Length: 108
Image (cartoon, rainbow, N blue to C red; front, side):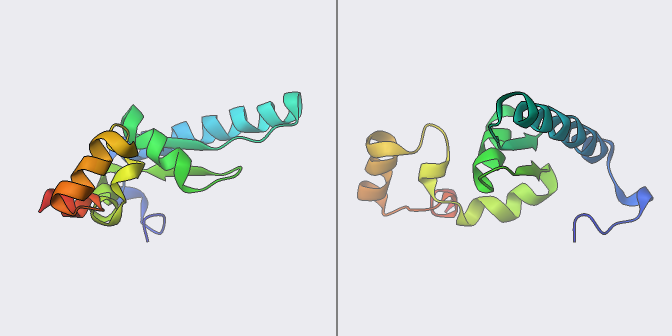
């Protein structure tokens, strides 16, 4: 899997994501100590992917979403999980007009 690679097989971007994940874990732990509330987090190369990762494993989890796995994740992802495509406006129109349900459907 993604984690079971040798040290030379990691890109610089992936190593930075892992460093960010450790920092976010410390922040999440401190939020729990200070407030008693848990929180989830997504760590990725941009805000939209991080938000997507944050919603993937709730509650009290964090998800690293490197670019190297996005191409496998997106085709089966329901369009309502993508910011701006969900809801009844655009997402509903896409589903009704073109019969699309997933990002993979839109890609076709």
